[in-house]
Each structure stands twice: as structure tokens, then as C-alpha cells.
Image (cartoon, rainbow, N blue to C red; front, side, top):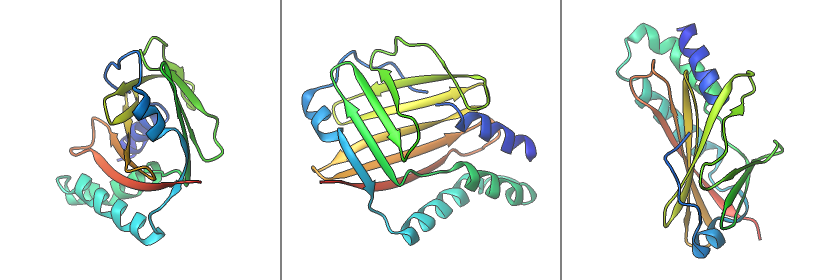
Length: 179
């Protein structure tokens, strides 16, 4: 099971997605651009994540679950604050005080170097109502899907995946716009 933890760590250090158009529609840009803070209560966050972890490990042999749960908890992180900025050609995302990540919407940039020093593919996908950032390497990855609800709510669905996981770990976090 330490291999699972290793694979998850490598996958989380990177992120990936399908091809995106070379522009973002102005309404989507206005809906997503801004500073967002977590709206869910700590109890809601914990309950949501624990339910997602149980779903992800449900089909594993019972003995593996004991090792998988802590590894998944370690890598299933959530930003307390998210900054998003979109224009017609790029998207920038910043999680808490970490360095911002800016990527072209046409995916014309190459891989980045992950925290582990290994290449990590980053892909952007945009549709009429959302943007997705995907980070991926040979060990797995994470997809982060950002969708505005109304003018002041941002719903972020995270999906953590690795070849060793029979089910992807998927959890959702709600944010409110900072005025």
C-alpha cells in the first residue's frame, strides 16, 4: 500500500485535461474571475471528504483500506481561498498563499516540473459554464473543475485518480465570492 501512497503523491504533485478552445466567453470570464473563500463549514468539509474516501476504497480488499484511507486523506487537500482570473486566452489559479499557476486556454504550453522534480502535464478545458485544470503524470493525477452557481457561489469538484485506485476519489467544495 505504500506504493499507492507514492503514486498518489506523484499524481497530486502534477495536474491534466482535454483540449480547450483558445478563448473563454466573456460571461464565463466574469462569473469565475475573482477571489473566493470557502463557504462550507469544517464539519461539512470533513463529512463530504470522508464519504468520498469511503466510496473510493469501498471495492478494495478490507486490509488495503486501512492503508489507503490515510494516504487519500493526506493528498485530498482543499484551498481555504481561491483566486481565479480568466481572459480570452489564459486562466490563472492561486490556492491560498501558493504561487499562482497561469496556463493558456489552447494548451500550447508544455509540461511543468512538479514538486517532486518530475514532469507534469497540465491541461485546461473550457466549456460554456466551467473551466477544468488537470494535472497528470505517469503515476496518476488530479482534475479540478470550477463552475459558478449564480453570481456569488463557486463549486469546485476535485477528482484524484491513480492506477491503484479502483474508484476515483471525488469531492466537492463550495466557495463564496469575496466582495
